[in-house]
Image (cartoon, rainbow, N blue to C red; front, side, top):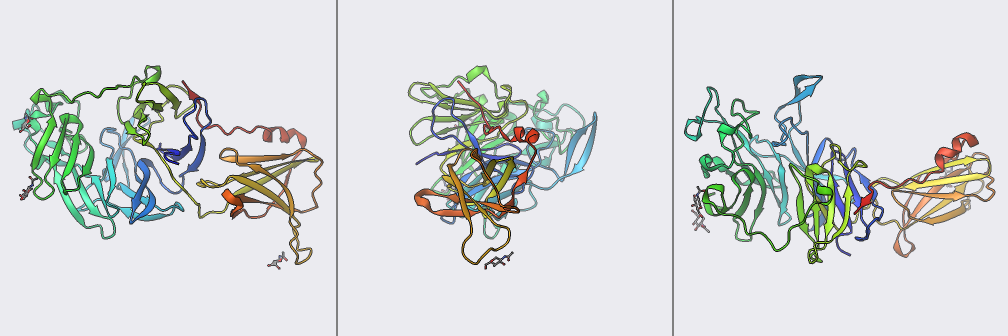
Length: 446
Ligand SMILES: *[C@@H]1O[C@H](CO)[C@@H](O)[C@H](O)[C@H]1NC(C)=O
Ligand SMILES: *[C@@H]1O[C@H](CO)[C@@H](O)[C@H](O)[C@H]1NC(C)=O
Ligand SMILES: *[C@@H]1O[C@H](CO)[C@@H](O)[C@H](O)[C@H]1NC(C)=O
């Protein structure tokens, strides 16, 4: 089964289960990454490291100059109308195993700042990351207008060996690509004033980097409207495609997709062609995702990352559809609430992708005998993130009895057992709050 999950990162990391591409389907949370990945997470997706399936993500804080997406040693924060400098941790690139444990943390070499735009594992051993740096240069030859405009952002990247942290290759655009032909000249001030290192002129802006099997690199530069092929030995440009001043345009594909509801994504976003040739589009800053049938351009599903159609600030740099199998190192969670002779049991297991059935058991607090004393209460097919079982028949619990839940996978295998918890006995007036079974995280629209 391919592309079983929609995998996306908003400031808190989420994996969502799409099921198939039916419209109006429920998409329930599988994993909340709070406590695993802090701050701003991006480029979060499954990958392969040393032959094993892993999850990888960039994590840092988002700086005020949104387009930069890297944390300086200090970041600006707008607080109560005043700009303040706060300390900030440098960007990190984390790799998690199938139990969601961080197994590797990569930081940029040579004290560079890691930027959000690229984090890719190459051949299961090295990573490509963006490491653009502000440089102090005389900008006169590239249209300097004002006194003090001395800062230019040199788009760059590093390939690093994950195990040792050794830099395999480093490239800086300013050594090879002339800023004169940027689509956003310094004089326009749209991509930095050049007056400070935080506001350096972002003439290049790397969006993605990849490596080919001959050891050369492909670099896509948004503010240069160009894709460059870079010699993996010398760093020289082998060829370039596009370029505003070459008056060339990229050939448009046969199909273009219209954004549902006319939404606009001023930044971020990506398009993934799936194994079945359909497309999965993430609308970046607009906070929405859409599945398209590439043959007909038909919208297969469309979902907002927030309940408000506008997305209201919820955005995802890149999102993907992939298969993924996660087996948490934590135990499942269980809760039991009783009112009169009614009992409701709840089970969930953050991160787990494999449970298909939940079984609930009751057992006495104290060991009555050495024989197994657990009483089977019932079982229910996995619902969404949380699965509930309502025992509406007369339920009489033993005083001080405990309950636990068993996660059952395909073929009846026991995947995990929760700890024993006491039954929370509540008056009927409070019972009502437990009667809802809201599990929907995303609402689909078409
Ligand atoms: C890359 O640079 C090296 C060293 O300058 C050179 O020997 C090689 O031919 C170049 N490769 C390409 C594809 O241009
Ligand atoms: C136009 O493209 C050619 C290569 O295709 C390159 O050598 C040249 O530098 C480009 N000119 C500009 C202004 O980008
Ligand atoms: C219950 O029995 C088990 C197995 O004999 C033992 O490990 C455990 O300590 C006992 N618990 C109590 C509360 O007596």
